[in-house]
Image (cartoon, rainbow, N blue to C red):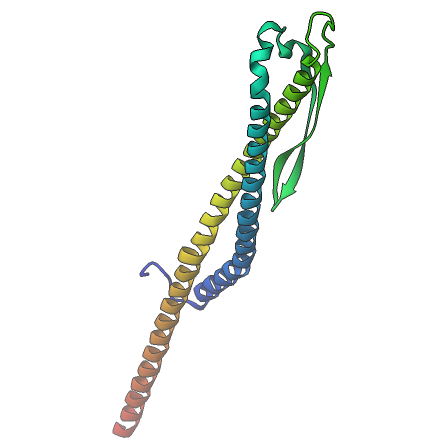
Length: 201
């Protein structure tokens, strides 16, 4: 701490900095807690969406063999519009899937089996769930990235900035105390010499 100047101005500067850090830290800690909760919520939502996607895939499985002689379902289904919105979670903008609109191209009823329309509806559900999973994954990734940054800031304040400011203030106070004590000693010596000279004359 030899680079720290022992002056009242320097002491005030470090005290002000400490007050700033201590005022800002609770806000960061609150944001960190909010983000931890939101990451857990996003994980749960993503897991549920993946489970729903797995169920939808399993339900479609028995039909796969039936599709062998049919025209591809994809030819009869097209995403017309994908509506993505954003929402603010703990101070950051994350995407949300608001709506997916599909265009269905009717099949030739004489060339396809009666269940073909049901297959198209099932594939539509599957596509919707896939998009939902993708958006939730992005949402979670953004929240986790923000949580990492916020945690680093909390650690910086708790483990570096605040202890550093407290040590510096302590060092300056000790140095100022030593200066004051040295001045008192010098004043006493000067007073004693003045008295000595006055006595001699």
